[in-house]
Image 1 (cartoon, one colour):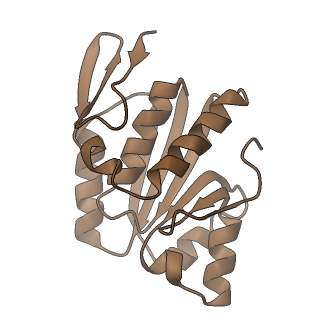
Image 2: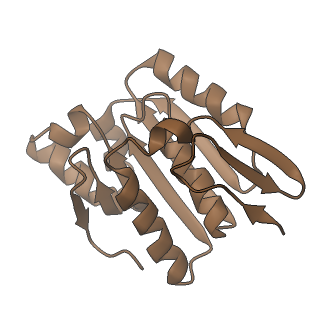
Length: 172
């Protein structure tokens, strides 16, 4: 299988999978996100540990730009099963995220986006924590005990706005 991409810092990443070229316009703004270096590092560490599957949850995903870029970067690294879940309170943002996911389909990437309360949705992740949880805005700054517990219990690596990570284990 031929899978390659331009460097993440390029204006637009282009992925070729089985001869099909797909442009990812979201990648042009991803490198401005302070969380991107940690997202890329966490994905690389998981892949170096021999993982072929990855699950990423984005609390307050907005239009899904970072989450979808992470999924395509995971694909470029050689992950063969990628599951991403975006959660946001805004129905219009979730609509944009779904549209963006539909514009760059890849059979190895399963993407779901839902309108939900962030704390409730993250609490549902506790039984089977994601490999990586991304948080932004209110979820990253909500200091209520149940919000902090929901965020930390939702994934093995939590990457927030401040580009500070609370990691349980990267290679788990």
